[in-house]
Amino acid sequence: MTQATQPQQRGILLSEAALHQVKSLQNRQGQDLCLRVGVRQGGCSGMSYMMDFEDTSKITPQDEVFDYDGFKIVSDRKSLLYLYGLMLDYSDAMIGGGFQFTNPNASQTCGCGKSFGV
Image 1 (spheres, rainbow, N blue to C red):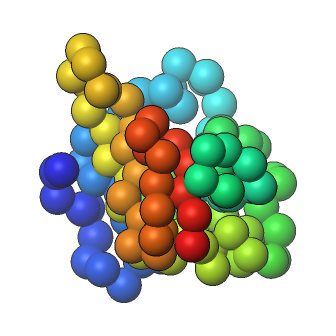
Image 2: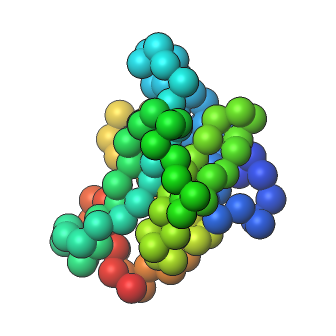
C-alpha cells in the first residue's frame, strides 16, 4: 500500500496512487467532478462499497467533504459511520489491480474486497 496524502485525521484516506488515478479519470470526463464514496446493503459480506463521480452541485449540507489537492471526496454521514478511517488505494497490477479498500471498521471482507461486514 502506498502512503496517504494527508495525516490520519481525515475520514477517508487516499493514497498518492489513488489520487493520481481519480484525477486522471476525472480529466477524461472533462468536467469538475467530485468522487462520492458510500456504502449500500448487499454484496457477499453484507455491505458493498459505492464509488462514482458526480457533479459538485450535488454536495449537500449533510455530506462530509474531504479535499485532496483540490480534488473532493464526498460521503454522506450515514456511510461515513462505516467508512471512517478507510484507506482507498490503487494498483495497476495485471492481477488484482484496481482500487482497493482497507476499512478498519470491517470485521469481515469478501474475497474480491468490494464488500464487507461489521
